[in-house]
Amino acid sequence: MTTSESSPAGAPDGRRFEPDLRGMTRINLRPIASPMPLGFYTVGIASVMVGCFQLGVFEDGARRAVGLAILPAFVLQLVVAVFALGARDALAATLMACFSGLWLASSLVLVVDPVGGTRVLGVLNATFALFALMMAAVAGRKRALWLVLCTAVPRFAVAALSNLTGVAWLSTLSGALGLLLAAVALYTAFALMLEDMRGEEVLPIGRSGPAHHAVEGDLTVQLRDLERQAGVRRTL
Image (tube, rainbow, N blue to C red; front, top):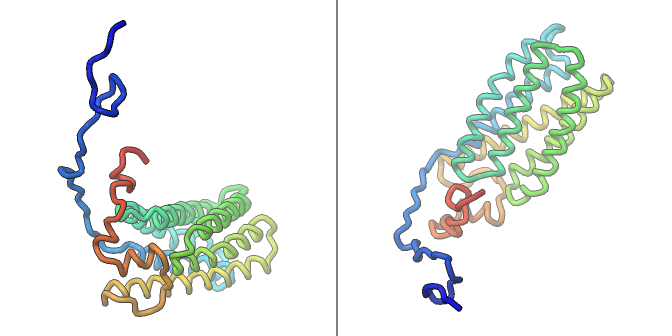
């Protein structure tokens, strides 16, 4: 009977263990400006345009003009999503990226006006309402983001019903809810911008738990469990 070569204490035969590398590991962080004010301002502005269209504020035939007006929202919110990923905020990045795709699809349908486009938008809006509901379920400690999501759920749910049924009063209700969503998003963007400029909370945003500690805590709190963050750990 043969025996294998001796291995480190506690290590299975044939397996090689690396020494503890934490003492020689360096993690570089790249500070960036918060992209969220831009993201919420974009939600607000695009929602105003679509809401006014649904309320009949614009003249007949303005469908393509509205589509072109909300097209830049796709680019702006995609930029916000990229920077939010770089800031390690998966929740904000996911929300902004999905908003970006929604504005692109809505803009193309309004401009091109394909056959069945309205009903397709209905299904898209219904799916987005469900997505916003799931996001709201995990965003409770970010009260401002949570409030935007809670406003988005009925707005897109009613928009879906309007697209699928063609009932006029549902379109009007969707437009009114769109303006409400715009008001909430614009307030959130303004509050975040004031906070960034003055270095303290000026208008209430309602952070709690980790979201509160991320702003009010010291550097030790910020770096806690950093080795387990996406981009640092071995796999996602």
